[in-house]
Image (cartoon, rainbow, N blue to C red; front, top):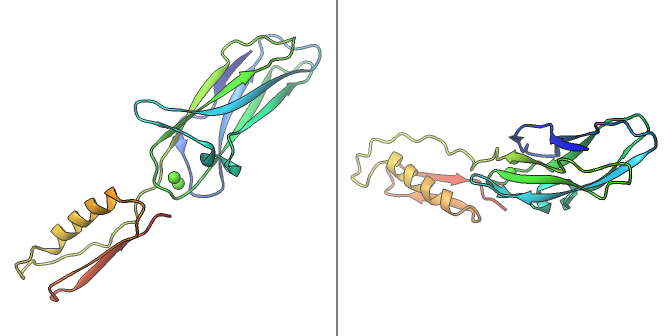
Length: 176
Ligand SMILES: [Ca+2]
Ligand SMILES: [Ca+2]
């Protein structure tokens, strides 16, 4: 019995479920029903953080049992990743098989998948300024503001600059 990931790294989505599929293959068709359990845990890597329960639909690490009826040699496992709008790193998770019934033997018993972040801070309107007031120009201000905003994701971000000509303000969406 071999487990393999069927979904390449894919974007998380922004709401609802994003499906990641895995395939369990048997090299010999069973003659009576066989079962195997599976569960998910987070795994990290050089460019990924471990996923946790909140990254999956329902807020729990998925798990379940797969049954092979007599004659069946492949079954799918579908893991529901929860889409959201939170800015996160790419995240990894692993499905692992366990407790096969007596007619099955574990081969490759785990497979990994990667959830790609598809969220970013809300875009900021483009500002054009002549910078004639001697206080630096708006573009330089916006660049600085973006850097500040990127470092502080958990607070509402807004700013207003002076002097009054030109006036302006900028806000990037707060993350909750
Ligand atoms: Ca998203
Ligand atoms: Ca996200």
